[in-house]
Each structure stands twice: as C-alpha cells, then as structure tokens.
Amino acid sequence: MVSRRAVVGAAGGAIGAGAVGAVGYRAWRDREPASPPAQDAEGHLLWRNWSGIEHAYPAQRLAPASEDELSVLLRTAQTPIRPVGAGHSFTGLAVTDGALLSLDRMTGLVAHDATAHRATIWSGTRLAEIGPALAAIGQEMPNLPDINKQSLAGGVSTGTHGTGRQFRALHGQIVKFRIALANGEFKDCSPSDNAELFAAARVGLGAFGVLTQIELQNAPLVRVLKRTWVADLEATLEQWPTLQSAHRNIEFYAVPFTGYAVIISHDPTELPVRPRGQDEDANGLMELKALRDWLGFAPALRRAAAHAAFQDMAPTEAVDEGWKLLSNERPVRFNEMEYHLPLEQQLPVLREVIAAIERHRRDVFFPIEARTIKQDDAWLSPFYGRDCGSVAVHAYYKDDHQFLFDLIEPIFRRHDGRPHWGKLHSLRAQDFTSLYPRFNDAAALRRELDPHGRFLNPHLRRVFLGEEA
Image (cartoon, rainbow, N blue to C red; front, side, top):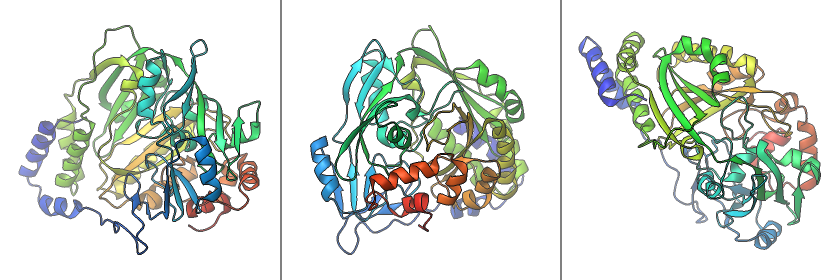
C-alpha cells in the first residue's frame, strides 16, 4: 500500500518542520496487551481467538476423525459444545468451558461432479486448502473472502463473504450439506430435503448442529487480472457505482486522515500468468501506523505527509488463477466490526464513519473496507432479501477498540445495518427479531433441535435468547 521510504521521508520532513511530542505518543500507543494465564485453576489449557480478545479454558478438546466418532462425542461431551475452526471470529462464538470441538481431522475433497462443477468437501477444510484441491479438478469457488485461513464450516456459518455485485456470500453457493444434531443424529439438507433446516443452518453459527460435509456449486477455473491502485477518496466515492458495474470483483479501502482510497479489482483475462509476488500489505499497514505514531497529534501534517507518500504510487498488477489472488495474508492482528447495509446506504454510512473517526479518533490508522454482496434466502444471512454494501472498521490489536461500539455501531444501526456474525457487535435477540424477517422461525427450529441448549454458550444465549453475555 505505502512504501516505508515514502512514509518515513514524508513524516520525517513534517516532524522536521516543527512537529513535537511524537516519540512520547508512539511509545504510549505501542503496548502489548496482557495475556491470560496459560491454564486455569483446574489445569485446563488456554484457548484464544486470532485477535486475542476472546479466550476460554475448555474442559474437553475434541477432534473426531469420522462422522461415527462425532456422533458419539455429541451425545457424551460436556456442554456447551462449541465447534471451532481457525478462531478468526472476533466474537465469543467458540468460547466454552465445556467441549471445544475441532473438525481439523475431517478435511479434504469427498466427491465432485465435473459436468455440473460441483464438489462435496469435508467442512473442516480450510479455505486455503480448497483452492488448490478444486483447481486440480478444473473448478474454483466463484468468490473468496479477504482472508482464507477459515474452515469451510466456520466461513459459511458466519456469513463470510467476498465482494462483487453478482456474487453471493460463501453460503450462497451451498447445494446441500450434512449436519450432526445435538443427539448425534445426522440429517442431509437441501432445498428439497429438510428444507427449513437448510434455510436456517446455512448460516447457523454452530447453534443448530455441526456441519460435516458441504456440497458447493463452483465455477470453471479461470485466470484473472488483479489490479491495485490509489485514487482520491472523494473521486472514488463518486465513481463507486460505475466501478461496481465495470469489474467482476471490486472493493476499496478508505484510508482515514489521508484523503485517499486503495482500490482492488479482479477481472477474467487471457493474459499470461504474472504471479503476485510477495504480499506487501502488512508493511503498508505498519507504515500507516508509523504515520499515526509520528503525526497523530497533527491531522493537517499527517494528511500532508500522506499526500506526499501516496501521490506518485503506480498501480500494481498480477495475473493468476482466482484462488491465488482473491484472498490475502493478514499477519497484522486487529479487531473488526463490519455491518452489511442496504446498498443505497453504503456510501452515506461510509462518509459518516470517516467523518466520525477523523473528528474523534486520531489513533485509527487501519483502512476502512467497502465491499458489495448479492442477496440470498438463508434465514440468518445478513444478506437475506437484499443486496448489500458492507463497511468494515478495524482497530489494531494493541489499541482500544471500544470506539467501535460507542462511535461506529450507532451509525450502522441508524441505517438498518446487519452485523457480520463473526465480527464485533452488541446486538441481542430483540434486535435480530426486527432485522431478520425469519429470525423467530430460525430460533424456534433451533429450540426444537437442541431443546437443552447443548450448543449454546453465553454469546449465543445473547443472540438467540436475549440474555446478557
């Protein structure tokens, strides 16, 4: 995104022109969060999510290698039973003092249909592993999220998505799935078999049962051109509707305190392969952090330094199979809140979010991500019944993220936003009842399938029962 030489030179010039206090500001911000103990008083080992804000000491850690083994474990495990994948959710979805259930031993391709471009996959398979497995049989998932470390089950169960007006989220490509219920019974679900469970559990938060096999409607493998370029933020906002129509996949990042946006597009191409090379996004983020650290106290100088760093940046291009380009490495940890809004509300909300951050939160340096997603009919899908534009706000893992709830979430909620299930939000059952037309139907079916709440941890009790976490 930004080169170290450009930012250091620009910020250094600004500091030399009269900025003071930068060293103290930088040292105050760069503190490692305290870690929980490695085990609790009973000797149970620590589990933490990727960003580090959620943790637990599960009494049992289960990793079945087959459906038969899973069936037995579901009947006998300590509760609450919580399936876990990569732990990339920022919420307490996987937190449990009962049984933490991993499907990491149930991975790989089960079967495929070359003519229909369909594939059945064990649900513990990570998205990064699915790409090459499908490419080997001439298929690809038609869209992928920004990060590919999640398990397939974790991705579909939280409504994880990519970007593009013609593309649904990951769960929108599900043809059918197999699910293990709390009593150990299995059900095969599709639009024609167990149709209500298919509608409810495609985005099920692990609250209806444990997905074991998922059949996806894929697409023929194609080569794409990935292009990344920097543009004036205001011009990008004005051009956003046109950009959506002009590219197969398109997203942009609004970089606060700079007046710039970074735009990323993917389009089919016949050009020869030109590998992406080393991912520089992490370095770019650290340069934006340096700009914050040095000039966070002086927004005008910060913007001037950013202008000097961004103005001459050349576009970058790569050509390869889509699964190699759509997702990115994200080694810099953060906490995130993302809401999905009616498409016509996306830009007004984004403008309001940027203004609020630049007015009240000089410590924010992560770019704000904007994407689009096609509607679907899964009962708990954030995209149920409407095309959506998403806005995602990030906070560095070392920084206070309470502003996401106090400053940003009220903006999202005023505009009828629905939160990403795997990202930070404060909503409860009462809120979801008004946001989701079929929420009560989904909640009733969940109670019928799991009357004793064996899958419900405190976070899910808040979501489905309205209890305080």
